[in-house]
Image (cartoon, rainbow, N blue to C red):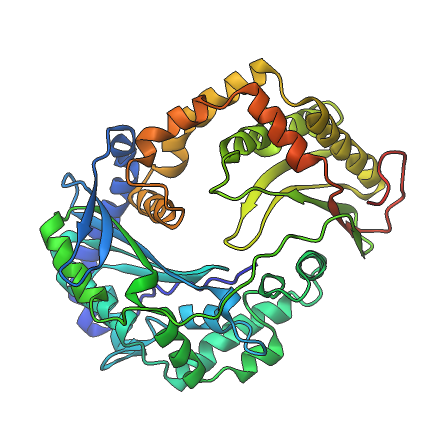
Length: 463
């Protein structure tokens, strides 16, 4: 539910006219890069660990075939760090990094970014504050210089604060009467209570109005530190050059973050929440316990979830809900993995007069998986798919490779994880998957229904 503001902007000016043809060619190069990079993804990637003189570490995949560089980084601490009454602070902050930095005001910074042919963005997630940049390698000095200013010296001028705040507020106001937005807000409060995960990332009208420039500066100072930083870089740059750029951009940040502690929480299950609206289509959401990324049975749970509802067209839920009965256009299950909470969530939407039937079928499919687990044939096919699809899903562009490498660092999986992943999946036995199914799916789920009052049928009752 976070409202991420992409901060790559283009401003027209006489000074920029001379670079328009060059930037058009640069844009074409970006497009070609994303088309050609899958070849790199399928090749044996050489991931280097680069450590700068000031102790900043990054994972690097060199590719000198095209003159482009992508960098992705994250600082620990995201919207869950918003102080009470200041909800939306981190999300607002991420919209302001190209709205003036150092001695450049908003317009000047955006002109420089445009002239450098670079794209920069920041996003707020629940547990991290992410940033990224794509640039032409022959203009990396200019691009990294602007990134340095954004990371170290954002201005947080009042006019941009008011403008970005108004943009966020317009989205909040537009969603005030949206049943799905209202439902999701009530869902988060129901399963998380007073925990920070229950709060909307974008905040609310009152909290947004209370956020000041000093609040933004204080969180930036607390959050942007080397101790909570992970970086990945892909493209036309060598390790020695990157080492210097890491110190340029991140080397002068404080050593340690000063973040508020966040407690672990288990979602409150065993409840049914009905958000009643007179709609032709009813949305259904169900939550069971999840699994931590570090748990020994993580891969067993992943394989089980893929068979249950993770695979778009071959899962059990898809077969029973869509293929056999035509109750929904789509149905899926996902393992939701936050730093302090985890869940397995099933979502679908159906005709309101068939909502109770659909809910009953979903619960029956889950019950069967919990009691009997998958077949040997299902497990073998799912292993083969998950091993083969990883590169396509996670390594199909410079940006996706960089994003994947950052997440591997967050999960502390090791720089050789991509090489070891297939063996970890293939080592899972049918007994392991059946045990994971019993462990996660035997619980009484939380259920949310958004639509007309639900007519309960056998097997589709509350709880």
